[in-house]
Length: 260
Image (cartoon, rainbow, N blue to C red):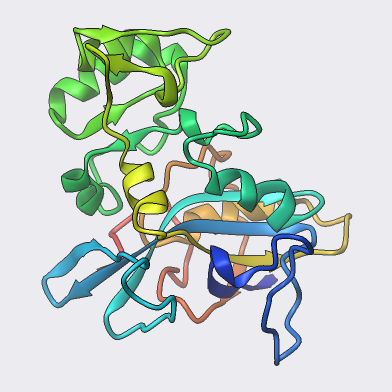
């Protein structure tokens, strides 16, 4: 059995951008400037009835309080070199101003459906393949007002018939799309940029003989709720996860009940 320890959650600003290390690390935990697995997402206020709303950390201090805050994973990934510098900094740029990441091509959900996606057992796990445009259009009809952006021409035109589609190479990034001159809704920008709400946790694996793809897949299927990650099929690998976050099931499976 593989045992994994996830460190965090940490706010993006908890890391020194020049070194990729924690600004404060009194317990000398492994730094996020190494090879490993990461999960990034957002903090939501919650109560006994479920999620309430994403937290605005321009108005609140970035101190994690598990009694009122729930970390919602949005993406699970891996880095073969440096978790923070190689991957986290690029995910954080959700509007992709630097053109060095794919975050401006990630699917967007409406704010209302973001509350439901993570626990919606009927919504498909794999939703990123452009080869299934017809399936995605059908899905959009089944879930009206749920998907606000997808990086696929036919799907975009189905969601926004009046969209001014701009194609960059073979992609349709959200940053260049508009409807009669108005930008289309961007929930990631609303949460990450406007609310300064970008958090992550990570596990380091300095041993290059460890297959990170297999670990990434096992972590994905160990989460209580869904993410948008495109991982491999569940590999039945047995893992034990240690974490301060209440986001993992004891047994990995393809069942995602949600976090609340």
